[in-house]
Length: 104
Image (cartoon, rainbow, N blue to C red; front, side):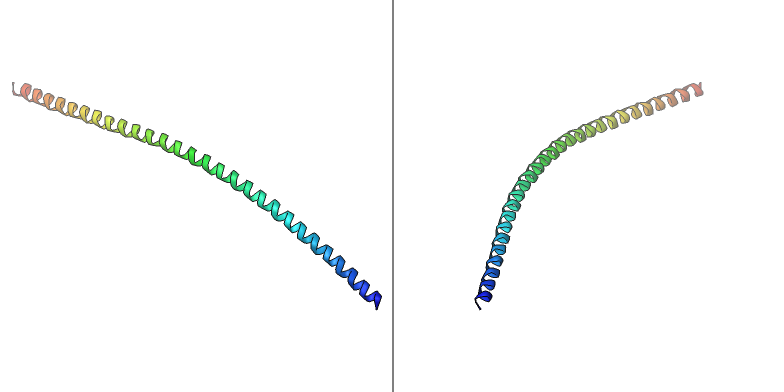
């Protein structure tokens, strides 16, 4: 009977050691996982912050380009309208001269 108790105690001790090792390994894994998670979070936040800054900078540049294009477009429309009006006035003048010459 002593052998059975000793064998049972030995098995319990071995199992306890294995469980203790599993708990220790799990704790180490969790600490490593938490450390990695925190590190990854910091890196991700830095990347997001940098991307946000870059995008805001690009947005500002694009807004400046858009404003310039709108201004150029407005100036072009005005220039074209002015030239078309001058051509129309010249055409009226030419037609008037032709009519006067035709009457003579």
